[in-house]
Image (cartoon, rainbow, N blue to C red; front, side):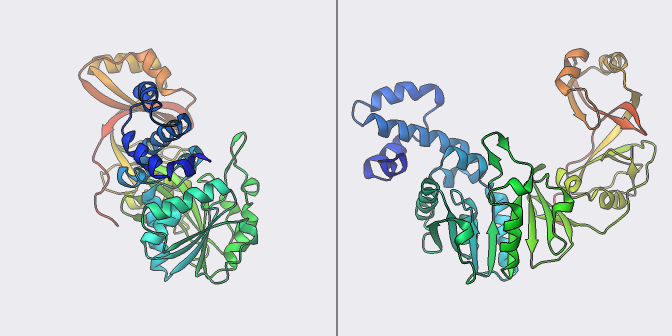
Length: 394
């Protein structure tokens, strides 16, 4: 009997509840105690699942993660709930009531679709993974909306569904796969599958080259809490559109096809665009909002003379502009009594921890230093955050 089958028995479920909050440091003692009354294989499976659930809480929330079942790859590769929910709600807003979720994994996206009221066919070719997806649909009371099928996605007929969602495998034996044609299944197959449906969404790596996005598709880059999570290639929406969406919110910036911003001397304020904005190549749109320019033609920092709130970039007030010189920086930080130093870099080979070791910040004050290039020359900009991002969705 495999681990999942063991855990789905009454004894397995009871044991899962018992070990729910076991800390890693206590696992050995807990395992030793439990093996007196339970099979060793079941105890190991329960403790392993408890560990996975604890890891999954960051993506799925503690309530759901505490009821779901996971595999190590499933925790690593599944979509964060906030992102899956946003995608599902967007599909629902497009009139989608049924979706074929191809390469469904442990069912994270299928769960979000079902909670948006969308009927789901969830397909995965791996028997163990499909079994976990089925168990998760049942655990969350969504099995009436989610049909899980163990099959090769390339052989599944999706003709009866309003939309297709494809999440190709982007990891192999050597780690992440960067070539979209090396995905499993390849991006070219996913694109053809998408074109066969009225609507479609393809989840791809955020580093996908813009030229790999088909002309008849929309490209969207999504970040959550400032971290870029994924890109989505949409069909049946706005062909050629490019957008950056920031969660929570959502707040969406739509590309206008603007030319590159002009390069300007560093002003009083420096803006660091959100990673989704940078990946979507929409820094020009942010610069236009801020009436700003770039500090260097190859660096995605925007400079401006006035503070303007924007949800699409973090603002800093710059107090000092120095050529790159560690000794001068160390002297300045000592003079300002800076003990809390945030180091950001773009266009610099210096590692933040290396710089901290060299300048040895000490004192009650805080500062942010940007290691970057200004008009082609290595530079250091020192400042502090102005305000948090705009709280209201736009």
